[in-house]
Image 1 (cartoon, one colour):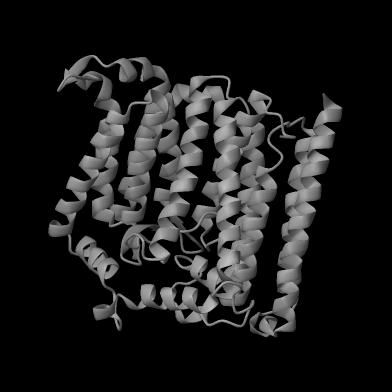
Image 2 (cartoon, rainbow, N blue to C red):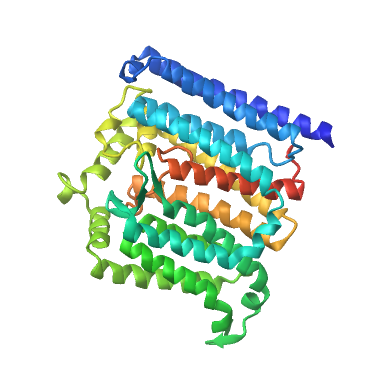
Length: 430
């Protein structure tokens, strides 16, 4: 058993080494291009690169000697994504790259804690209503004590740093839904009533789940965090479908979403503004439409192969280091670079659903499916917003965009997925 773990972790470290070489090449290109002149110290690029490689390697070594036999591909995939984000942050906003590096160390520490103390993930199913209560509190706090950024009031200011509480609510939502659906999936699948001849669950069966979902959406209207609201709603639908395999819930959810979206368009100015910009940004070129127009120019300028790292003008896009870093990647690495990032996320999602299918209990399976859906939906929504397929939502690209709260939450998500993989004894070589 220990020999198999050693071999798996060695293969993992080999993949991490390839990821490190990839990141080092990016840093070398920036160095030759003179971008390190913008940094407080010329050594920061080297420190960040070597520190990132060493930190990921130490996590793998710790897992080996701690008997952790989880999936060996997820950590290298996240390493490549994180390395890409750091390289582009060094190129775009060097001081944010330094901050992101320290947040990465915090995130990796959180990953180690989760994979060590919460390895028996079945225990998490016993606290579903604590998740609901804690999630409601975290959504309420920014309304009364938060600060507004980018039109969204979802941040708590701690002077030295800021925390976006809605990021942590994503994990709590998945844990709550996984526990509730695992306990009630038979009733939800079979139904205790009928609507137009279609079996549906009764009010008592839906009550707690719909209550939390409704409270979350109402609070998010006050926070104006449309991206988080959309992710919550879609994750909710994905997990309900995973638990019941009932198309009715998807159809009902989509109809509800369309009605709610239409109502919000006429009621809330910020929703109407984003939809109008999505439909036709050109009348707003000098104001609110400037960001998405510059994003489209950047992607178009990149072509197939890109302008080359450091040779583009992605800094013309406001907030490019957070909401629009994918546009910067497409401009300087081209369509092929953008597709490469999407393929990495598809591999992550494939491994996540494979873990869910091989989970040993309903709660673990639903949790893994929910966490994987959460990641996939977030990537889809941000990419669709950048290329004007959907209205802008102001969310970050997992592991790549700048954002401490997002980075820590995504590594906690990774840790929970790996715990399910460890418990299932997933064959890491396939």
